Length: 165
Image 1 (tube, rainbow, N blue to C red):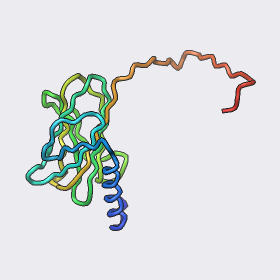
Image 2 (image 1 turned 90 degrees about the vertical axis):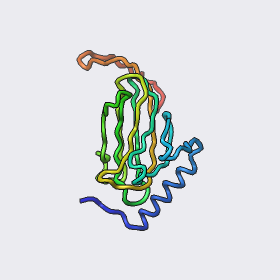
Image 3 (image 1 turned 180 degrees about the vertical axis):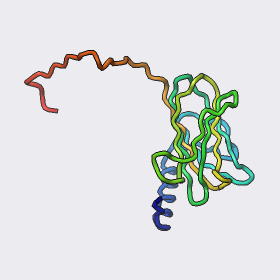
Image 4 (image 1 turned 135 degrees about the horizontal axis):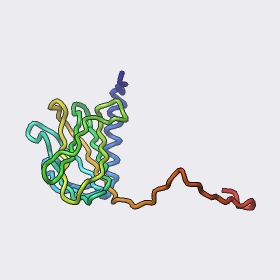
């Protein structure tokens, strides 16, 4: 059974979210109706309505990038969903709720990009719900690493006179 916060707590969370957005100096001024191009690090406020049921944002990505997308609803009504779409219009993944939280307040998507190109994020409301939201796009390039074989032994030397940590 999902816990529904009290009305006072919901109002506090909405005000806290708005205050956090005002404190972010790099807040993108793009509104949902404008959609358009976003970059890693962008934070966008938007609205899903009957006249704009699925705003779409584009961004450029490189093969191997890890992309993280958060869509957080502001207020009541909206049950957000987000789809990550390749440049050939193939949907890579659609997320309709946050798998870590038993709630429809937010969705979280994490995906490695399969190729270099322009991708799209389509934001919508499940079951035609509408309302305001915050979109945050984060990304990091592919990380090269050395694989460790657990069957191989490793020699670790700890000096007896080492300084405390």
